[in-house]
Length: 128
Image (cartoon, rainbow, N blue to C red):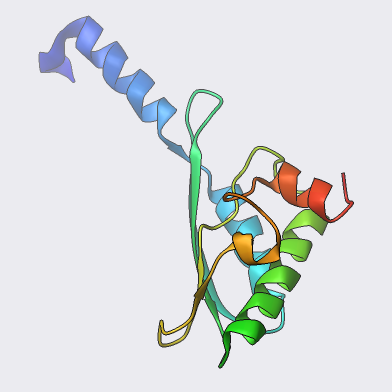
């Protein structure tokens, strides 16, 4: 940073703060997901940037049919809705896959028009 000068150094610090990893969010998402029967693995990558940010999740389900995958995903979304440590603005995963990737489901299967936030999941399941 010393070669970047004072403006470059300040900008680098601000950008690094803007990309702050949110390990608390990652841990809460993963703990909540792994507590649901039928969830094999759950990995989350969360970042808070200047009051916004993003959440990405990779959730693997133990499901041998689409109906079974939808039931597990529905239980998982209900668990997210009930978890008070999850911020209302955070997004839920885009999709949920079974172990071999042959079954992929999304929140649209349980009535959402897009990837829901925690707030939307709480409203949907009456937990707001």
